[in-house]
Length: 90
Image (cartoon, rainbow, N blue to C red; front, side, top):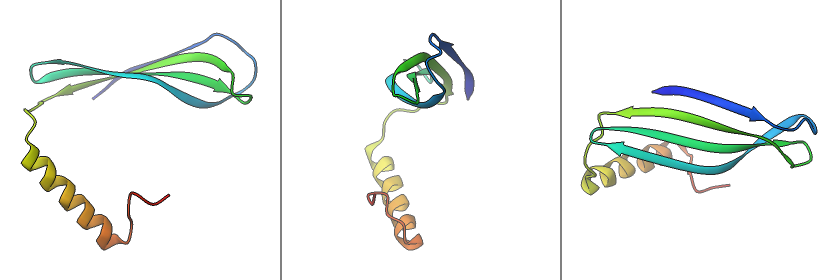
């Protein structure tokens, strides 16, 4: 569930054109977790003109089950191949 997002624009060197990834963190507490994604705001020259952070709340987490994950991936790949789309193409 989306919780919040914020920006700290520290310099007005130009128009913000893109975001650069800084870090991601997942803090798990039982079946709940908080995901934090931090990024840089880049201007049109590629200079950092601010920072940002997005917070997501997760619930209903379950223990990792490799067999279920493998089955999920196999179904996903099969659907992509049927649709004529492969995720590894650029």
